[in-house]
Length: 83
Ligand code: FES
Image (cartoon, helix red, strand yellow):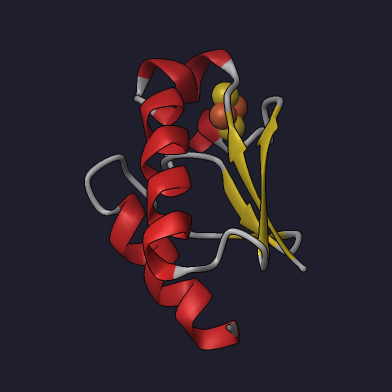
């Protein structure tokens, strides 16, 4: 089981991370990955402080330069590599 964490701390929340959780939930269903990927909310990952984008971790590894615009595509690409 892969673990995808999306930060729902205040800085990421205002950038739309709650909306992203909904989008990724849909993506997992569309791709048939719902039973392979555990989607979890997370408190602040201290990633917002350097303006690097949304706090998102896949199996404990931070994804770089993720924004609300590119998040869905980046996450899909990262999951395709391992599923
Ligand atoms: S609020 Fe998301 S990384 Fe800090």
